[in-house]
Image (cartoon, rainbow, N blue to C red; front, side):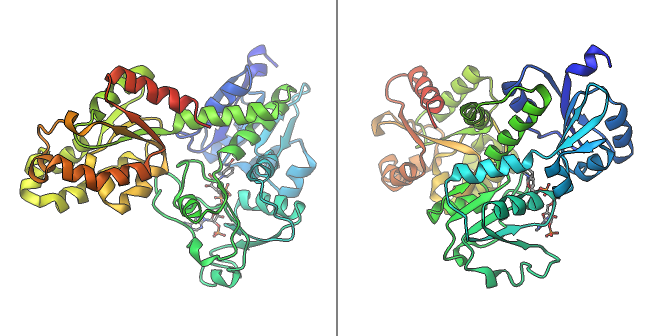
Length: 414
Ligand code: NAP
C-alpha cells in the first residue's frame, strides 16, 4: 500500500454536492478528506481498489458497501448497513455503522427520557432501521410509519398517543424545505421531536415543535457524532464529547445565514455589505431579487401591482433565498408583515433586528415610508421585528460598530 493511500479518507456516495462531511472532518482530524462521487457500476472497483484508507458511505451505497466488506462489526451486521469502511494493514476492508452512535448521542443530548414511551419513526430506510435499534436499546417502543406499511400516513393518527416523533424521511430537506411529514398538533402527548435532517437547520416539523414548546433537535448533532466515531475508527484517536459539541457549533455558525430585518432606511444594506466583507460571505438583497423577478424597480412594482402584488413576489423571493446556507441576507422592511414569511425567515437563519431611531431613518426611494409615514410603519412593525429577532443591534452610532457587534454576538451564541 502506498503512503498516499494510507492518508486519504473520504465520503463515497452518488451526489455529494451539499455534503457537510469535509468541513466536519477538517475539524476532527489531521487527514485529507475527499468527496468520491461514483455511479453504481463504479462502486465495487472503487471500494476494492480505490486509493483510500478510511471511507464514509452514504445513500445509496450503504448496503452494497456491507456486501463488499471482508469483515463487519457486530452492529453493522445487525443493522445490515455500513457507513464507515476502514482498510486494514493487510488490505482487508472492515465495515462499521457509526450512525447508531450518532443517533444515540442525539437522543441523549436532547435529554428527554424515552424508556417505556411510544416513539413513531417516520420512514423505513437505512436511517430508520438504526433509529429503531437505538430506541429499542433505550427501552422505548418504536412504531415505524411507512408509506407502504401497515402503519402508514392514512392511519397515522391512531398513534396520536406517541410521546416521541423521529423523522427519518427526507421530507422537509433542502431544496424542498416547505414540507412537513406530519401535523404535530394532532399528537397531544408528544414530548420530543427528533428530525434527522440538518439542512435546513430548522425544518417545518422542528419549527412547529418549537412553537408548541416541544423539546426538539435537528440532525446536525447526529452527523457530527457519527463523524467523530468514524474519525476514531480511521485514526485510533478518540474525540472528546466537548469537542463534538464545539464542532457542531462551528458548523452551525458556518452554515447558518445572517438575516437582517428592520425598518426601511435603518441601514440593512450597508451593514449587510460590511458583514459580507468581514466574513467573505455572499450578500443577497431580497429587494434586488424581487426586482429581478419582476424585471422592474420596486416603485414601479408598487405602481402596477400594489403592495399586495409586491408582497407576493417578496414571499416567492424569500422562499428561494432563505434556503441558502452561509450567506448574508438583507430583507425588505415589510417582510415581517406576512406570517407566511416567518418559517422562511427562521428556517436556516439567525435573525438580526437592526434598530434605528425614527429620526435617522431614510425615506428616499421607499414608497411605503413616503405614502404611509415612517412613524405609522414603525408603530405597526416594531413589535413584529422584536418578536422575530434572535439578536437586536442598534445602528445609531456607526455602521462599522453595528457590524462588529453583530459578529461578536453571533460568535458568542450557543
Ligand atoms: P433512505 O434509505 O432513502 O430512506 C428514507 C425513507 O424515507 C424511505 O425508505 C421512505 O420510507 C421514506 N420516504 C422517502 N421519500 C418519502 C416521501 N416523499 N414521503 C414520505 N416518506 C418518504 O434514506 P436514509 O438514509 O434512511 O435517510 C433518511 C433521512 O435521514 C434523510 O433525510 C437523510 O439525510 C437523514 N440522515 C441523517 C443522518 C444524520 O447524521 N443526521 C444520517 C442518516 C440519514 P417509506 O417508503 O417506508 O415511506
